[in-house]
Image 1 (tube, helix red, strand yellow):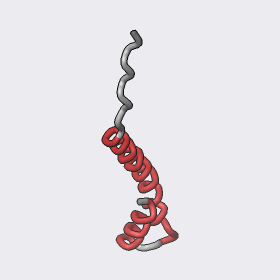
Image 2 (tube, helix red, strand yellow):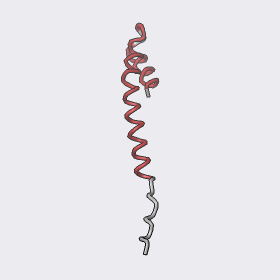
Image 3 (tube, one colour):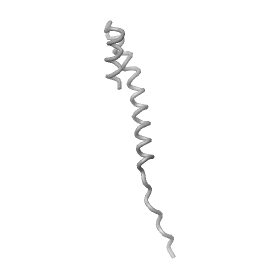
Length: 58
């Protein structure tokens, strides 16, 4: 996501001293990290099946 935003911001605003790419990276890294954690949490909660409970000992 960081690289994609860096390329997009550079295409929109130009590459004056790399400032647009630096902005894309500084926005894209935290955004991509949060998105990755969110997707991982959703996958774990969606596909996690707890093991069946053991029957009580008599």
